[in-house]
Amino acid sequence: ERELFVEASEDVFRAARGEAEASVVQEFEAIRSLEEQTAAVANAEKDLSAFAEAHDRALREQREAEEEAERLNRALQVAERNVQASEAASQSELVSPQQQAEEPEEEEWVEQEDLV
Image (cartoon, rainbow, N blue to C red; front, side, top):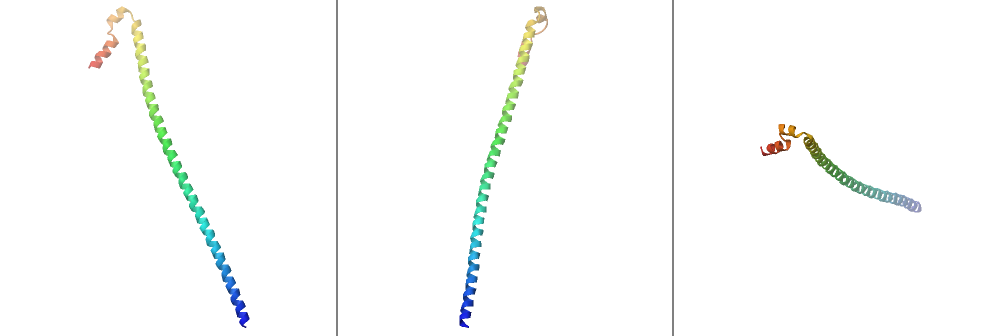
């Protein structure tokens, strides 16, 4: 009877030890999985940060490009006005001296206007 009891106790002990070892293995696997997930989250945060920086940079470059386009449009408008003024001056040079005497010179009129 005693031998049966010892054998039964040893069987129970071995079974308990096997369950404990299996439980420890599961815990280590769970820990490893959590570490992998933590690393994945850290990488995702880095990627998100890099994306946010790239997005901010792109917005800044777009804003700078729009400002440059506005500046170029203003310069183009000034150039067009200068061309028109130059063409008008050329046309007035083609007018006969008699017509020039009858009409006040545009340049003088502009100068007078600037003084006002």
